[in-house]
Image 1 (tube, one colour):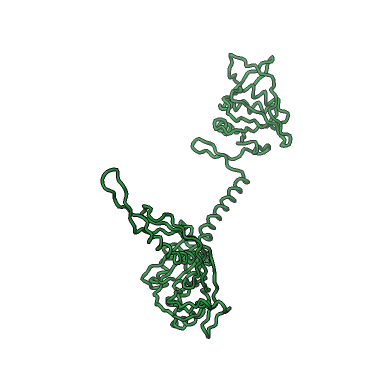
Image 2 (cartoon, rainbow, N blue to C red):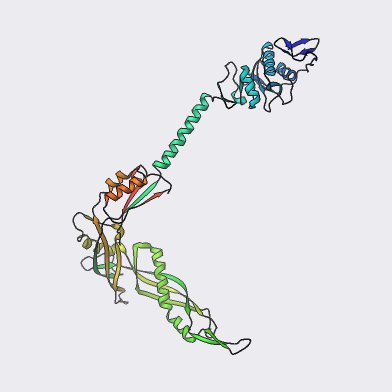
Length: 432
């Protein structure tokens, strides 16, 4: 670039780029940005800025280090000639420049001419060589800085650790084994007594408590009566209707209906740790509300019962306490009781002594035994194994006709967790 008499000739390698025309150099434009804290000036180049305009903006920069931002690309800087002229002008003006652009057309020319460039202003560095670049498919890709590489490595380590945690530690495994089982049982006669406060093995007395609940139950009953119905033509037809006997029968069902409903609610309220005895039920009926009256044409009678019910209940642990010791004596050497097979049931009960609030009851405890299994050894053999390997190990551990059942949570986990505490082994009887 050569100045004479207020005009400028654009020269390339000593020859005028446009010998027939003189391009006027515009007045120096304003500085688009100053970054004194960073130690360099910034100028903004528009897409349509010509080379003299760009040079004028560069001359107007106050600091010797200038970051030239070309966010939308520039036709003059997208040619080798334009880039070379800008670099030459900056050198003569004593300016050190770095292009800030993501436009491939500008970046490729800058790379070919050895002009430093970056993708964002945060990466502008003066006094250092151009960053390494990689050319892939015609696109130049800058190598990331060391801090960026370290950040990416840390992110990959975090992702890898999370994946390892999910696959190796977090899954839960439950393995159910079905060893050869032998059934055993034990019966005993108990006396449920509300006065007793502890189990008495000598007299087989078990403490009981009376629990009361308020219940409401609706029952639908088929009707037995009939009534004539007139038709628009022809003789009347007979249709089902509520009979007075249906109302009487519904009233007699109030006690068993409320007792059954109270038994369900007591079991839900107190859980499996209690056993309740409907033979001791004390039913207080407050209302019997039939939805239909006698003579109403309907195929069913709907009756709502309301009342309160109390009945005796005993803790299952107290009932099993006397049976467990007798049952354990039936377990042969080298065998163990399958916990999931233990069942407590009422064989018979009564008669109920309403005055003393006392009930004799025969209870039965059923269970299954199997060859003793070293659960800890099996668990240690299963940790970290795949589904197929775990199933094969389980089959060898117990010679049963029923194959073991393996459940993994989440279900897509490819192998068992590596923590033994997250592997649960259960024994079950194939025919409980």
